[in-house]
Amino acid sequence: MTDFFAYETLTWPDAAALPRSTPLILPLGDDYDWPRVAQALDNPPQVGRLPALPFGWRGSGLTVDESKLGALVANLLESLCEDGFARVYALTPPELKLGLGAASLVQRTDAFDRPTLFLPDDAARDKVVLIPIGHTEQHGRHLPLSTDTEIINAIAQATAVRIPDQAVTLPAFPYGVSTHRSAFAGTLNCGGRAFEDFWLAVIDGLAVRGFDRFYFMSGHGGNCSFLVTVVKYAGERHRRIFCATTWLHTSGHLGAPAIARHRVSARGGMGHAGELETAMLLHLRPDLCRMDRVIDETDFITTPNYYMDWIEGGALVANPPWEDDSITGAYGAGSTATAEHGRLWLEAAVAEKCDHVAEIHEQQRRREERRQNGWGGWGA
Image (cartoon, rainbow, N blue to C red; front, side):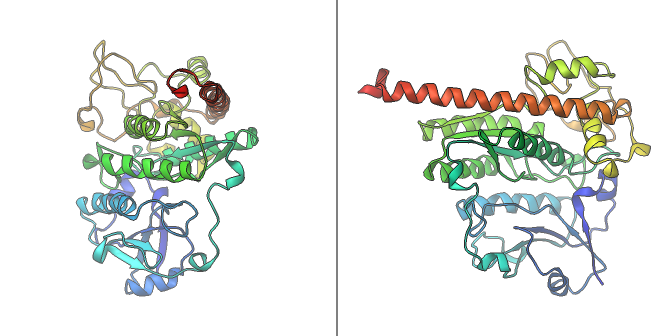
């Protein structure tokens, strides 16, 4: 009997220690016959089941160009191959042309034969579409690979529940960009260009369907600069939408003061797998936290204009090798985290996102009023 284990629940040391002969499967959707998958792989003792892509292919409810989807999936698989994993596959519905060759396992599912449901529903065209994007990457020795996705999904879902007349959320996307991944085996990477192309294609598809307000919400710092590029291209391509993003979460007018009120660690204690993310996971998924393994690392090479904390500071923007500053993959003081602070910070993050949604609505409303009144070049 093959044991299918949830890859994203592993910590980095556990992922790095996997035998490189372990099959790893990245499913497009999750409605598959897993015993049949095991048979196709000759019934190995264990198979790592990576987080499923929630949309992007024909029949998923939100379709993008297959060349864009294929490039993103290929990069994810290649990042694992670079770490020495020899049996890495995408599990897909039939009739897709993703260009994956032997790395593709195909299985027809019941979902593929059901009538297509649109994601999001067209009735939500007057709402802001929340687009939460996490990642599957190392978070030191004590937090799971799913940390970023767990957090941003919780924030997006709570925001949509709190203001259902103003916002609708897509399922959290569990993959992003990690330019530091080579030092920490098991971390995945969409690749910056493929990531940008995929998300611009998502906006293209939604804009064609009449959606005009979008909010990219990232739970992973490595996504942020690439999402800025997506937002810029989207605004140029679709001139009557309002598409926005921001630096991570819990970092603006409500989040930053909440962090300052409750944090225990000094500056540098919240860079990555530090106090903030650990506290949020202790609140959301204490079962996935290994606090017996936590190691605080705050010996970052800091200068007045370049330092790392949750809200990065200084005038310089750079991307030096991660291993210059961290041995364990963490940068911060995770040992100072508490579940109660995690609850408070998540509440602040949701309140901040609700405010952002209201502002996106106001921006789009006021801009459309000007356009319809022939303001400036709109009257030509």
